[in-house]
Image (tube, rainbow, N blue to C red; front, side, top):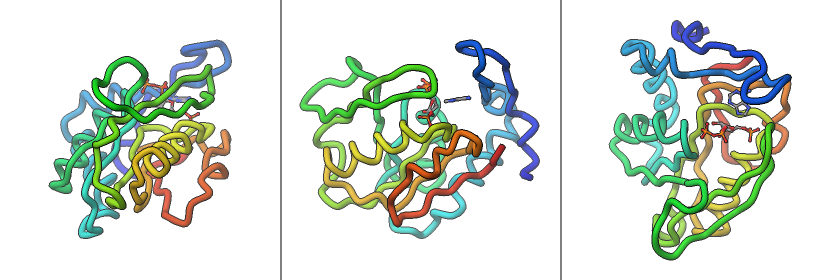
Length: 173
Ligand SMILES: O=P(O)(O)OC[C@H]1O[C@H](OP(=O)(O)OP(=O)(O)O)[C@H](O)[C@@H]1O
Ligand SMILES: Nc1ncnc2[nH]cnc12
């Protein structure tokens, strides 16, 4: 277990009763922990020929931008509705607690660009699956893989990852 795992805090009944919320704020606030987490996320992808990290709003932005910098590649934001200007592509998806939509700018990536999809938590897997569909069908990108900091295995999200590209999780609970 990486030395920063203890910096992810479990908050019961947030944001709704029954949810065990995995809070990465203490990890982000810890310089060494944050650096180690970013290095661990980036490690499998060094030299993989990626052009960008696509990060999912909001916590996927914090980690994704740092990983993109670590790999010296670009960053593409996948955003909640109403935040991005210009011509957009969109998907709708279900969450552990509610539903949402994700948008990306239509010209964010060249056709067939190899991209790494990144988020903080894999729970039911709906967000990651939606983001992958958005990149593939909306942009024509090639998903080289996906990476998350924490996989909540009991929620079964990995079963929704139907692609041959690898899905890495730095930590599992
Ligand atoms: O695997 P799933 O069940 O789809 O859940 C995982 C998603 O849920 C959380 O995002 P949330 O929508 O809470 O947004 P936030 O990052 O803005 O807090 C988390 O950051 C993942 O993106
Ligand atoms: N239990 C959880 N903790 C943190 N982020 C989440 N996203 C979906 N489920 C979550």
